[in-house]
Image (cartoon, rainbow, N blue to C red; front, side, top):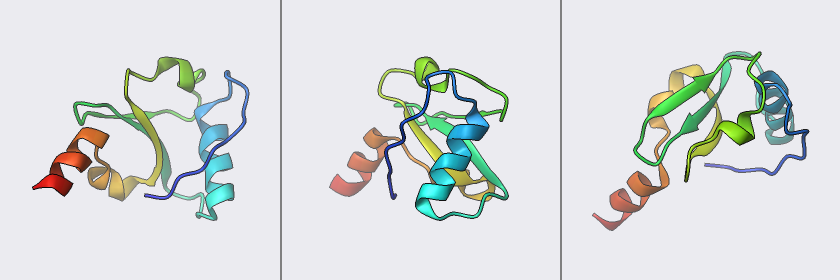
Length: 86
């Protein structure tokens, strides 16, 4: 994973977050989704019109910008650690 830090208003739309991250990481905008991976491994995708994403994240959840067809490759920190240790 590659990461970046963004400074956006807390009420920024999911589309704004997604496009800002894509620009910063030099990713093509088409077919990208904004998703949360929860600590239990559950993946939740956000609609472009969703607002207040940072305030809706679960405890230890992580937010990702990913091509739609790569969502299955996103894993929680817990899963990544378990995989590394085995």
